[in-house]
Each structure stands twice: as structure tokens, then as C-alpha cells.
Length: 125
Image (cartoon, rainbow, N blue to C red; front, top):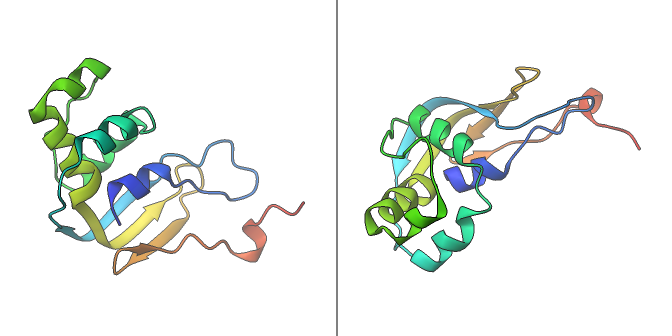
């Protein structure tokens, strides 16, 4: 699971005030090389919750992202390279995503997060 995916997932257990960002428990990570697309990165920048990305990257052992960012940094090839690596090349292969409010663990196996809820966790409409 890429950190791009992690940045867009949240826990949807009924009654939560905030299921984002999900914590990460790491059992196995991988780095998978992907061709960089600067235009894609520039477009995704505004959609990414930066603090959550930085924390997730640190959990996976990558500490090269700045804590604070501004749009002008998108003009830097070095910043784009680091952003690209964190967002698209770092993968959680085995582990769990953890709801920040309930502590419920969602397993990640072979890079695929299982976000299915138990029957008692579903908000009935």
C-alpha cells in the first residue's frame, strides 16, 4: 500500500468524530521504483494532508520530508523527488492501519488494506 493510499483512507466506524489519520503498524515495507511525474505531484500536493504524510513516512523509516511546506517548494526538483519517493515508492506490504479514536486495527496483507467493518461498527441509515 502506497502512502498516497494511506493519506486518503480513514476509519468509518459508526460514532467516530475523526477516523483520520490512521496509524501504521509496520511488519514489512518495500520500496518500488516508479517513474516520476512532476505534473502529477504538483496536482496532488493540494490534496495531500501533509502532516499525515510526514508521520506515515517516518513510521516507514523515511525522514527526508520537511515538517512544513509551501507551494513554492514545488519548483524544487529535490523536493519533488522526496515527495515522489514518500508518496509513491514507499509501500506498506504487511502490518496494520490503526483507527486513531478506537484503536481498531485494519490488517494490511500483501500491500492490500482490509478496511471492512464488523457488523456492529457499521452506521445504519
